[in-house]
Figure 1 (cartoon, one colour):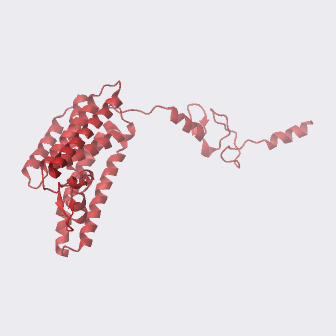
Figure 2 (tube, one colour; figure 1 turned 180 degrees about the vertical axis):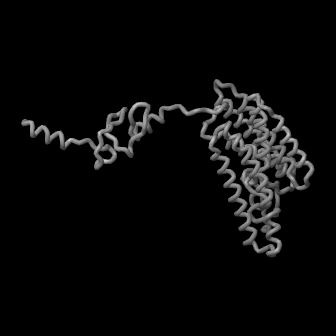
Figure 3 (cartoon, helix red, strand yellow; figure 1 turned 90 degrees about the vertical axis):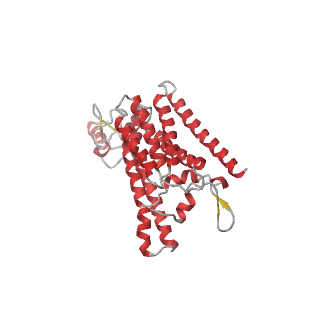
Length: 309
């Protein structure tokens, strides 16, 4: 082979990016040695890496954990934001239901929307023991509508009720999610809400109850144990709890059992999360969640037997 032919062969072998074949490049990935163009370069401690090697490397890196074993992704507060969005969406649905029902005069709608009142949606989803529909059939938790123990926590009587609860969720929820991670926080929130609804079902018969307050009180109860475990000052949290308890017992129309039930469930879960030993922590925390859920199920079964037996 002549020297002229060798030069021609070298010229035709200009490397191109493995992801963009039309782009010439002389930079190679320091891990896999494939050519990469400027759009595919990711700065490394030495040289550049291609997108595939960066992705593969990120899979092998262990994610950080919170003090109670959760994923640090909870620091972004995505679950808290999502819960607020669901609560707001459900309230908007109740507003639409009230307007479409045609049962109220225009002058009454503003006060009803702002300060509360029943609607087709809240009637469908509130916690209630047993009641008779207009067609003569029975409804309520005792009639098998167990979803009410969950849906009640996402419904509110009026904009003021919603705003107060969502403000508290924004403040307390982000802190709990930061400490627990996403799925632990979501489990705490939902079980505390169901705990409050179950207490209403057990001890407050013939009342239609809605609101996220049970979950909010559950977050306060859990945070007490989180702060104690971290040796943080709990005086501010206890002051907040005392204020809310005074309001609970003093202001008419507030669900006392819903608040106390949520507080008890949240405190039990919070204590389990906070004091689970490092070795086998996940198993202990899951066991605590399962035990709380089992106790709530047994309580509902017992109360239903009382009402229907």
